[in-house]
Length: 213
Image 1 (cartoon, rainbow, N blue to C red):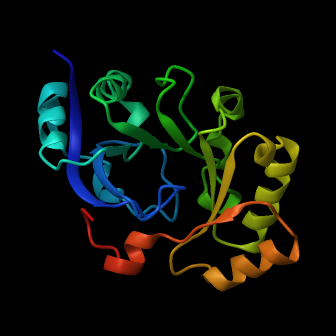
Image 2 (image 1 turned 135 degrees about the horizontal axis):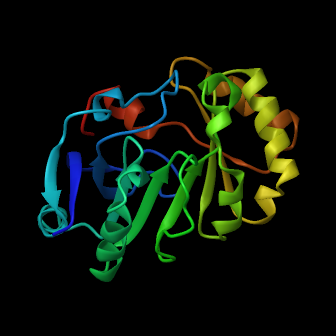
Image 3 (image 1 turned 30 degrees about the vertical axis):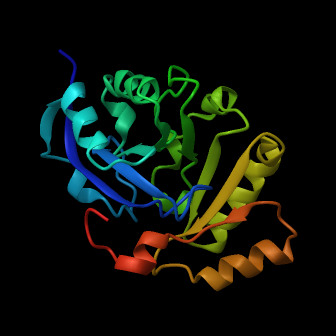
């Protein structure tokens, strides 16, 4: 029987991506092979509780919500995540996954919206990016850059241009919470006439860094 280690399952508003503001059930898987310096979910690195896919689906269904986001940690670090994603799609949910970009996304169910990071220099994990993942993304997917500095911003704009990302899918630029002022990032984007979507983490504006919201 398929099992995954789960840190938490909760109902909240989506704080990031093009689905920002929409009620969503979050399934947070335990574990991550990366250690980004700005990580805000270190509590998901360890611990958690093993649950079967049927148990996860039962909890998700209890919230009576049509959208589910599978996140982490790094959810794809658990191979059975692929089975969970397909099971959620088969159950009729609109499913998204938040992934670091350090794991192969080619086997993710084609119905899933992939929100994939490309790790910037200041993350400390830029060397873990799998650029071949870009070939497995399509127009419903999104690439996210979490930006802590002008160095990060300049590097991100180069990746957008090199891989022609905004011709293929939606590109998200997000300032690191309490590290880079959102207005500063907004001005850089405007000054450069950059065709990307800037986002802030809505859940942190509403609830700060409280866990499980």
